[in-house]
Image 1 (cartoon, helix red, strand yellow):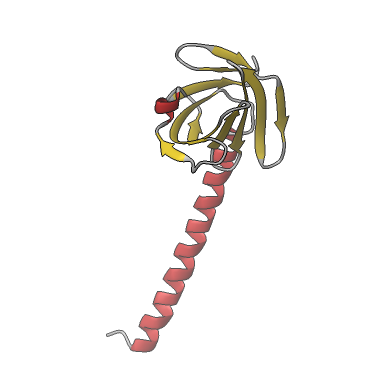
Image 2 (tube, rainbow, N blue to C red):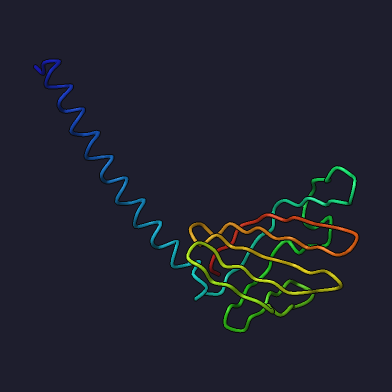
Length: 143
């Protein structure tokens, strides 16, 4: 028969062991994911949320497809290109810092910026011209 003191001690030990194992698993998963988003591998990115903004008006929220942004894009860091189902655009500027990869270019009269978080592959993108601003969010993964 187990006393309350022994149950408490056993629960404390099990909690400590599980916490240590979880921390080790999380650290190894983060290291594995981090290697996927360091700019050394091609990525496929899915866009999931978009905001269209005009001067003096409230931004409208919708799907990226509603504003002409492809649902999926392929990023090839070696070739410095981003490709959708219809066209491919050159990455004109690329900054690979400790926490993120920042890319910039132009397409169809818009300047664009794409930023990928190196820790988890989340994507933030802006497209701007003299009349409009679009902000798009998504997720990237190696193919």
